[in-house]
Image (cartoon, rainbow, N blue to C red; front, side):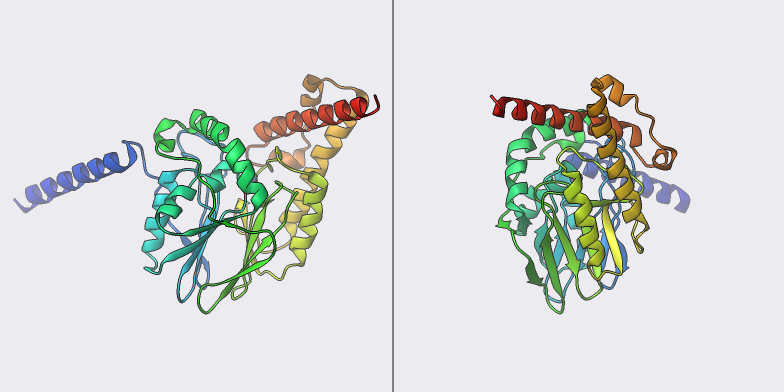
Length: 324
Ligand SMILES: [Zn+2]
């Protein structure tokens, strides 16, 4: 009898859970975000080292938050409205303090498409002005692209939104008992990257200026500037670093690996141009073994070479027309 009652309760719970999910998420799975504490008051939602797929719903990015005495500061807003809503719910399991600030490290979909949920939550949203305009211009086609890769169920209700605050120079935000710094590192991974540094625990969130164990994405990058930024990031006084993608960084090894990969891309593109290769020929380049272990290497390598080729063609065109 007790067993029968327990069973019916369990069935009811399952039915209600499914209904609740359906109401909020149009029937698709949840991200089931769970924050991990990496230092006192500093939490991370680790993304998967995978390409964007209907299975992961775009949960391939690291986001996080820092809890002060008065408020919470979030780093990156995730790929969709649903992700951001789940982030807010998950933060509520740790603290009820207001989520007063959200720093968006750059305009790429996995970092910036959850902005609207934080604004609905009365959170101030900060971006570099270059990222703000890139998000406004490229956001709509990037959202279509994201929908094609992960499916409409995940992106439903997601809208491209804009930040409430611009960050062009170093800013300190006091969240009570701790000061969090926002530092611009522009023109490297994208024209408008920001990094976030928690002084109290010497934790650094770099967004996509650092990738660990995953092939870097470069469509908006200037590789030489990016490599210079890596040196400046090494000079900052951090004990642990949360990259945009990949596990926590506690030493300088991932910097060397990323620098070699970026150099390899740049070198491959230059050599191909020198030889007058076609794009198809450049894409035949053998990827050195040391990079074969990187997640998403094949797809990212192709995307990178295509993008570097286009840049090179555009430069050639402008230099030939400027001489006329
Ligand atoms: Zn990015």
